Image 1 (tube, rainbow, N blue to C red):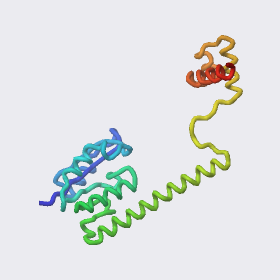
Image 2: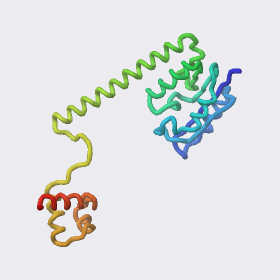
Image 3: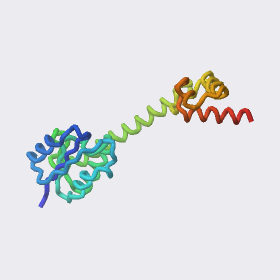
Image 4: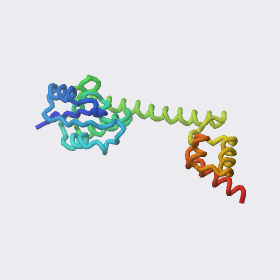
Length: 193
């Protein structure tokens, strides 16, 4: 017998799944899995999503409030939709965006279209990232990483230490972290040696 299973998720402890669970039950879900977990967590780290996916069999239907409940990114969501479609599991979102059972033979076309769009999006993001890095290289822009300590400040660190100032005292006067101060002093020893 085909089952209709729901999955509800909220991101923070200040939120509640009550509204989603009520809507999923009203939509005919006989079983609802729910969890409070950050959307940044990988799919494998979402135990209730895994439980919901493991409970589904061919012909069953997974119901969610919105597509973003299924993954962290559009690509992840589309991949999940494709996997479920291949397994013969229908997916319906309560916001009306997706209903693979209602689409019948057109469901694979929709999933294919969404997969293509996700692939295009992934390529565009990679291209924009490459262009941005190349532009920053050409213009001498920041490529990330920790900022370099100004030479004037490094000289101040060395002078204060030579005057007998403690690392904490140097930190208070320069605003640099003790680890940074140590690195400056170590480099200075290497140069002096």
